[in-house]
Length: 82
Ligand code: FES
View 1 (cartoon, rainbow, N blue to C red):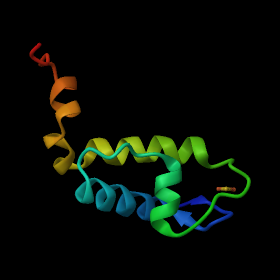
View 2: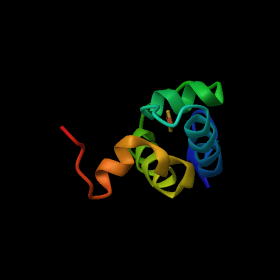
View 3: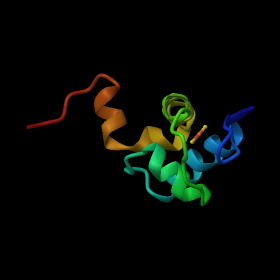
View 4: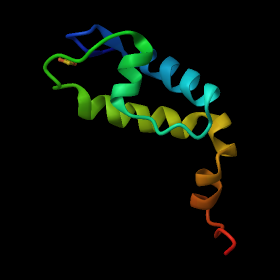
């Protein structure tokens, strides 16, 4: 499915970018801008940015390698030690 018609970005492109960026740096703060940069594209109208953000978060939650990030462990119910 095409998510960004200006830059011709599909949902698969976003999934690939999230997986690659998370693998490269488990602690990276994912943003739509980072996704565009990884794909070598630029947004134009910006209409797609809310959908790209939702897909980015959804694919990031699916990525098993992200489970090793400290923020994920903290968010999973445990509390950081003082
Ligand atoms: S639809 Fe993505 S920038 Fe226009």
